[in-house]
Length: 140
Image 1 (cartoon, one colour):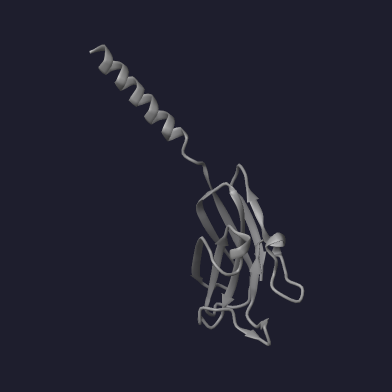
Image 2 (tube, one colour):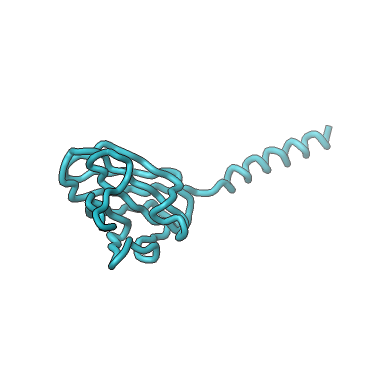
């Protein structure tokens, strides 16, 4: 009987400790500014690796464009380094239109990073989540 009680206590404490050991997650709130029209959609992606920046996302959203400003949130994001990129896909064709490799649709990245003679760089767009929710503002 004594052994069963000790086993039960150990199991209860283990369950409590494993629940506390779960990783803390955070929210990234992104305000998108200077949306020129209600045409098309805003496509926004969250990336966690330099090699995937502007190509592959761990989370993505597509929302109907609204002229002016909009706010989008990514929830349950663990600590780490991230970057956000977005486009205003005005014709809803699912890609960033370009002319002579220059974007012809509005786009933006975290930290409002802009590219010089090429796309924005991970180094300029990245941000860290350490111990609190993040609020970003991205201008198109």
